Image (cartoon, rainbow, N blue to C red; front, side, top):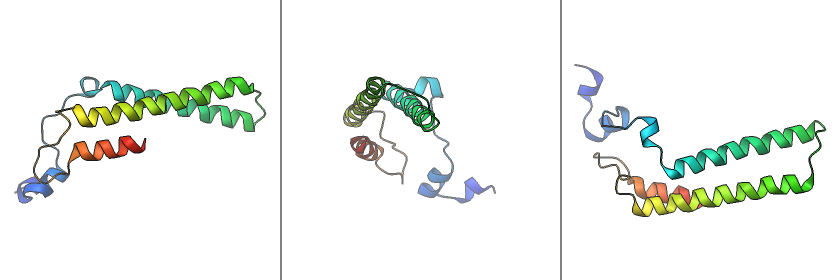
Amino acid sequence: ATLPDLLLGAKRNLLFDDGPRANLVDALRFRDLLCLAFLVWGLLLAGLNVGGAFGMSIGSEDYERVLVAGLFFGALSSSSGVLQALSDSDLPDRRPGLAAEARLFGFFSAWG
C-alpha cells in the first residue's frame, strides 16, 4: 500500500491535494491582480528606498505619489478580498476535515 492509501479523511486531504483544481491563469481573479499590483508597488518602493540610501535623488512629490499609489492598491485589494469572501460561492473548500476557507480569507483580507 502507498502512503495516500494508509491515510484517512482529513489527514489525507491535508497532505495530498487530489481534488480538481484550475490552472493558474484560469484561477486568477480581479483581487489576485490587485495583490500582484500591490506586490509590484512594494518592489518599486523598496527599490526607491535602497536607491535613496545610496544617494539616488527623488523629489518628495514623486515619493508621495508612490506612497499614495500603495495606499490605493492596498485598500482596493483588501476591500475586494472582503467582498470576495462574502460573495464567492466557489471559495469554500468542501473537502472533509479542512478549515472554513471563506472565513479565513475574509479575516486576512480585512487585516489587509
